[in-house]
Length: 291
Image 1 (cartoon, rainbow, N blue to C red):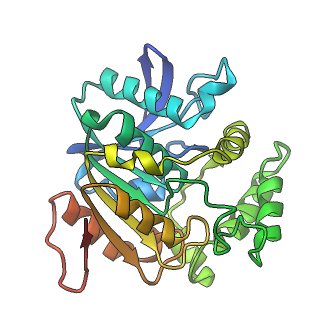
Image 2: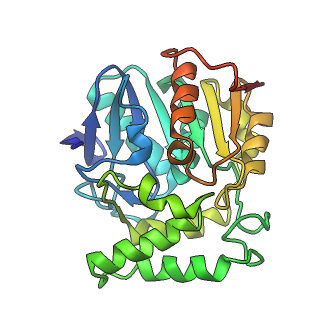
Image 3: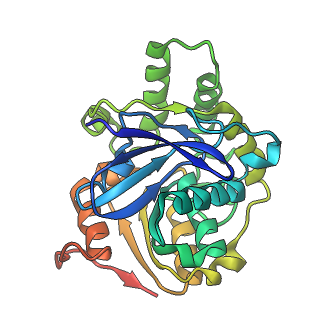
């Protein structure tokens, strides 16, 4: 499955996107992932019924560079996405974000509510989560915190061979799977991504002051909040908290998932998201909690 590459020239610079599928447009991005023609497992979840636009943010792939450090911030990413939407000619699009992509989605919903027809947030949070929850693997009191930090530091090295990078990435990802022994089953599609060290470093500083919970009431788009019950990156209580504040939302918790419900419970994930987007009826076994 290869995605079509396109360079989009906007008033804020040139951005690299990858497209797949037809139908209602869905925008997908992540704060520090660097995508290519092999696509993305999360984005692929929406390709059956939608035209998915996978965006490389500033300083990733062949997208514009950051002239000033603030251009690496999440709110700047949202403004960049708006320029891409405008250039592509969409009055509105759906935004779907996983993890730090969901944090960008929250800001998008707050500051450009009229640009979004729907908002899908998966395994994310509206405030700093590493120091406030011992269930978070980035918390110093989590039993696997040291190992995760070691792997993240090693992955930032520009001197890594592709073989070493793949092995380290697998070890890091396994820490965020409910059943790590199924890694090969989940990640067998040939998708290859990189991590932008400069964006990750900026995000780690930005995260320390990140808290938009009091602004969540400004989100007017229909919102779907999804999270694995055992999520160690953005623990489930943060999804529950978002559901308390976002006016028009549906919350679904995946009982057999960690941070990747779109892989760990793939069939159910697609059933829930496509029902939310109006393309599929929902099995009686799936419960949506509405606010």
